[in-house]
Image 1 (cartoon, rainbow, N blue to C red):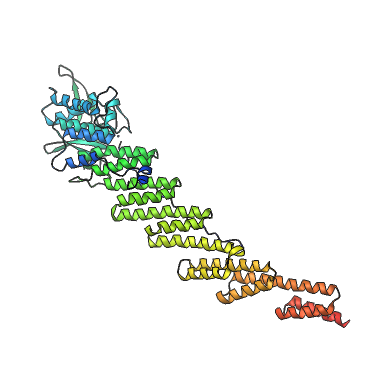
Image 2 (cartoon, rainbow, N blue to C red):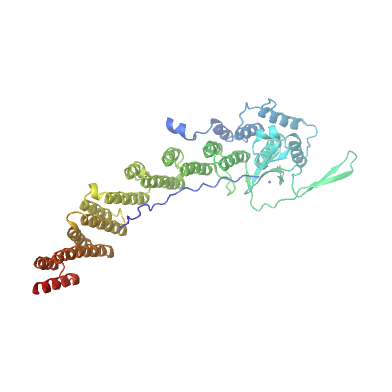
Length: 507
């Protein structure tokens, strides 16, 4: 009989949590060494605290944006000038400019023109960092919006951020009017309006027009939240390159930066810092699973799950993650024949699972253990002890009744076959199988096995009769076949043998 298939578990691989869309136009030494750091940069908490009592100054925004970009205050550009000094100098130049209009609308437009002339040289969808604007002049919607916000704030304008599903820009509040600023375009102030150009004598020489974009779904965000999008885009870039371990510390810092907001935005487009961090933690964990590092994944769940449980939803997700990791590990061990190691793993990590998930793994593992015992019965097993173990497993609901019956049939049939090959032969196999049927009931598998043992026994009895008869030992042949009919009364072949022997004796 072919052994039943024990590997019914499926490999679970957690799907990567959705990365934040790109916006475009350690408790122990071992863990802290092996895993991404989970402690926020103290600057993240310092920047978060600055907003408690007052609004951010434009100087604060420079510090936050450069920090979010990964450039410290001492970092310098290719010309040896610190990025902070370069942006500060530009802001001071703007503030001191005699051409800076007094009219607030004109001032907002002037700031955009200044940003493009001073820094913004070419659009690049992936260039989200403020320091790289200083270095190369390349920008995307986030980095250009952040730069504009800094310069507008320095020019004493009331500026805010705005985001949609895949875009970011700025707004300027002018009295009761809020003006959109598409910062990726030098003519993007108040899109939909026409900007005229005149020569030195006042003659109209041309105009520029940027179409208004109909953002049906948009969310106003604070300047701190706008700066945090720099980190979101950096995270998205890293995860796109499968550099999940590097993305985690950035998400930790973003969560800390946004932790103390007084009026946090509520929008499906703006990923909350804590929720975003949780997704990054699971993405890193999923990368461990995809790499076949189940024990590291389980250790990560212990380490990161304790630090960032994530509330009720997070706890549910951590349980699911631990189940996926342990499931994959146990399946791999069982496929390698290491059921003892698999049981040790379940004992080690099983307490962290939901009861239903634990029962599922326990049942599958018990199945493998019982089948392994069945396959070794002829060498070092006791069939009655094994059948008792299967009965207990079914009785305790650790094994489904149908699977218990399948394993039981496998054990009984294999043991019958083993007995048939011993000196005791078919009679022992028949007696064992009949006893099992009396205890467990009839089924097609056991009936078929019993029928084969009986046919083999009858064939043996007939063959012995034939040898005696052909040797003309008719009396002994008749006595043998009479005893055989006591075993199998009414068997047609044996009745024919008896008639043949009696006819021979009459001649």
